[in-house]
Length: 352
Image (cartoon, rainbow, N blue to C red; front, top):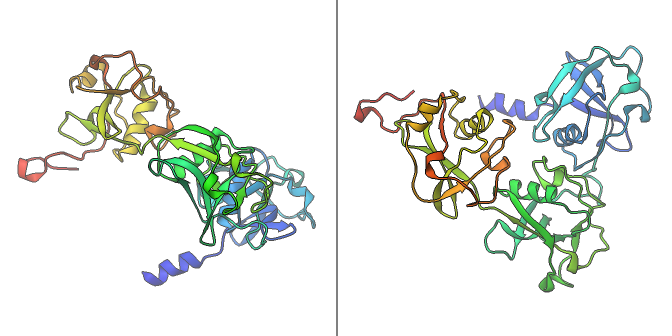
């Protein structure tokens, strides 16, 4: 078993970049049945490139150039293997992304990828990120770590989308504020490492975002970036005999509170069940939802809107914490397919 695991870790990537100035740039090719073929650029975007960069051990995704720019071009007999690649940007390999077998693409539509070259001394990948000098680890000045030293990040080009990535990377809640803040103690003591960040907001880590040249910045510490995230998010279902059904409560500032059912629907149910590892929503009736009774205390969330693809309810849109126009008669309840019972065998119940 240990030998098999080591072989899996040592297996080569199923993707390569051909014709670029270094191994982290070029025309994208994937391997199938021992043969290398190209990727059609239909639907190809920076999130797909980010996955390729991660699989190859390269730095940040910096562009989606056309594959026909790279010499030598793909040979006519070489096949175009896949098209309509649709990555979220968080996958470890391109094979994990949604994709289709190519059926109407030619080599003049080959996809390319441009990643930071980690072997270049001008573009090292930050090894970590933190929010410094704030009240807790979810608020503070953005700093990245490289070779055991911490560096600040310039506000130039920074956006709330980049703040979302930092908050997610640190395990915090939603990004609620980003601004310039002078870091007087750091002046003359700490270099400014990153600037011109261009995040989509969906990246898994800050180093997956395109940026200006790393380690080179003309910014001053008056332009240091400050970010504030909501506290880490937790939720539970209460009032039923199973962990996977009940009235929904969320934890904020150490206090549990309920969620108002304004705009609540099937997509929101799906996200809750997914986050609790409770299977799928059973789409309960209004009567079944109300069988868990009203809550007491705080009503924390209202007007929650999910796409259904989120991994956590905190990634869905909602009003600010504690803002609502509801009573506890409108508390949300969720029933999922999972069967984790609160009371085990000593109470006569059987968990599933």
